[in-house]
Amino acid sequence: MGLAQLLAANNSKPDLHFTGMDWWTPPLDFSKDGRLVNYDQTNPAEEDISNWLIQNPQRLNLGSIGFWFGGAQVNESDLEEKSQVLDLWSGSITSTFSYNGSRVTVETRAAPDSDTVGFSIESDLIYTGALGLFFDFPYADVNKFDAPFVGLWNATSNHSTSLETSETWAVFKHTLDDNNYFLTAAWEGPGQVAGPENGTHRYIFSATGSSQLNLTATFSPDRVSSNMSLGALSQKSALWWESYWTSGAFIDLTSVGSANATELQRRIILSQYLLAVNSASSFPPQESGLVNNGWYGKFHLEMVFWHLMHFGRWNHFDLLRRSVPRVYDQFLQSSYDRAVHQGYKGARWGKMTDPSGSSAPGGINSLLIWQQPHVMYFAEIEYRSYPENTTLESWDEILTASADFMASYAWYNETTGVYDLGPPMYPVSENTSPNVTINPTFELAYWRFGLDIAIQWKERQGQAVPDDWVTVRDNLAPLPIVNGTYPVYEGIPDMWTGTTTTEDVSNLPEKVVAYMSCARAVTE
Image (cartoon, rainbow, N blue to C red; front, top):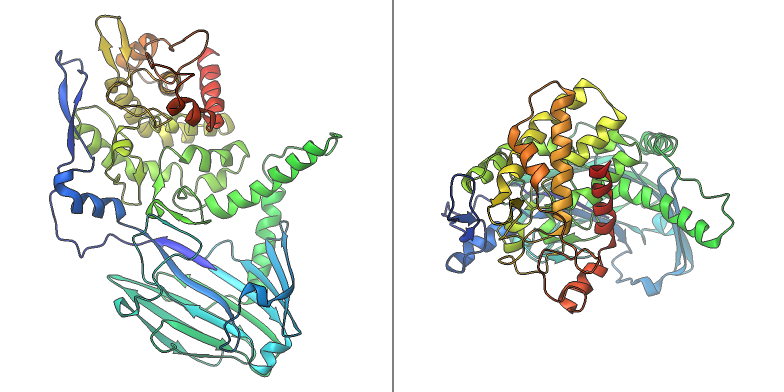
């Protein structure tokens, strides 16, 4: 198994000044001639600093736990009669296979309230010492993408591990750079840990003399006093999953006499499991959840819509609230600072970010805007389920800061008499020239939606609505239309014939759904 966390900021890099890049930007109300705005973009003169800011902090693979076959090199092709069953109801995975004529059965569960995994393994190979477990600890890497094994396993001199053990437990301490964390393993019956193997950070656990192995392993930032038993873990896991499946919303297609409906039902249920496992953490998941490590393990604030909004729609607000709105509260100050630095009001949310709230340098990273109204959508979904003062209060500053930025970002075009969006900017498709991209269809619809929700938010609380919110909402540029269709942005050439636009748009049908949702909400 692999586990991941975000490393603390790497303090080995000296304090250096990152200047970014300046772009000519349309005027705010106080300027008629435009202005230079400094954006966090990779500067060719500061390549090392730019790359370091993009790569740090990176997500760390805490460790790997797997089968040890008595020192033999075993590949999957060496195993026979392989089977694996995922029990969605209880959250357990049962795997079986045969090796050298002996049957192996392993059941795996994870705790719902700690970074603990439990194994129950049965095989005669355990009794003879031909089968055990390994614990291995890698060093962090700075690869943009990694799958399935994340980390450097051969940079052994860059980090250290220590082991403390007794008859029924072992505590590993892993130290790399300025970071420490612990793995505590506890087992029932005979067992011992040896290692590390020469030149590695790999330790071997064996339970010779027994054909049954029950073990739990807990990863933690601080040393834990004790591990829960496998029985307690299994009970907690089963109860949590039962509660998950028996609460929230559900779509029932069982009465539809179609093979497509049956397959859709299967996918809906399986996706509910995968999203709970991969997305319900204290921070938004990275683009790929736990499937692989992409973009250095950082999460992108424009993508939280897909990763987290569904929890609200499925009425699993307990899982949504693990990260939202807390993350927005935590990032509010850095977003205020970003807007002020660029000469805007309110708070401008970043894109490719990390728990510190900083946004990695980059052209798309600094010029994308469609993440800004997400907070309005999150807030409104919660309010419709919980129309209470506490909901209004918990989101009020976030929505106010977001709407202030959105109103100041739009600029009044004296020629057309409307408020325009951009340039420079990247629209949701990320495939147009930022210097000519103006009034993109999706962003215009989403901007109206967001400002409208912010206005309603103030009205619900009996508060005064800022005049500029209403002015911009009511006077935003109309959605561009070409031959009865919506182009990516106003004035784009060859919208439906140029492959640079049609290929990308056709691959993003979910954005059409989001746009229609926003447009419908505004018209209603």
